[in-house]
Length: 203
Picture 1 (cartoon, rainbow, N blue to C red):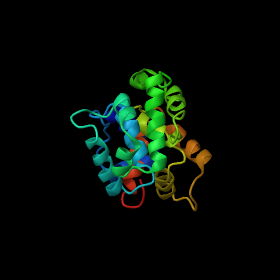
Picture 2 (picture 1 turned 90 degrees about the vertical axis):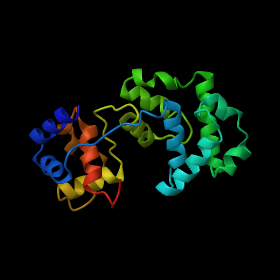
Picture 3 (picture 1 turned 30 degrees about the vertical axis):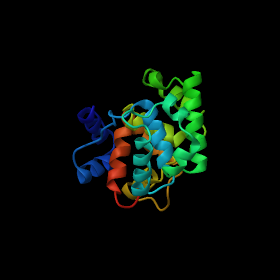
C-alpha cells in the first residue's frame, strides 16, 4: 500500500510531495501484536498522559494478568483496587469496566470489528465510556490499518497542514477536510507524513 499511496499523494498534491521529500520513506505500520481489546484498553490508559507515564502504567496494567494477555473476562474479574494500584485513575477504571462489560454482553463485537466499515467501527467504539471519535480513528489507522482515515480535529494534523500550506492560523475541521479531500483514498498515509513533518512539536 505504501508505494501506491505515496505515488498518489505526490501526483495529486505538490505540497504533500514536498512533505514526503522532507520526511523520506513511509514507515507507517500497525500494531499486530495487540488484540483489538488490548488496543482499545491501551488507548484508554494512554489518554491525557505523557508517553512515559502512560507506558509505565500500561506495563503495570498488563502485569495484573500474569501470563495471560488482557481480555474482557479477566479484566472484569479484577478488583478496582488492583487497577488503582497499577496507577489507573478512578475514571479510567470505570471506562475499562464499561469496555469489558460491553464486550462480555455482546454489545461490542470487538473481535470482528476488522470486518466492519469505518463508520460502524467508530459507532461501536464510541459507545464505550471514555472512547471518543479520535480514539476510534486511531484504532482504525494503527490497529486495523485502514488506508483512508482523516482525524480532522487532531492537533498534529492541523499543525502539519498549517506548516506545510503556510496558513496564518490553524485550520478547522472543515478546512482540514477540504485540503485533505485530494489525498483520498490514502489519507491515513498523508496523516502519517504530516505527523512526522512536525515531530517534536505535536503528534
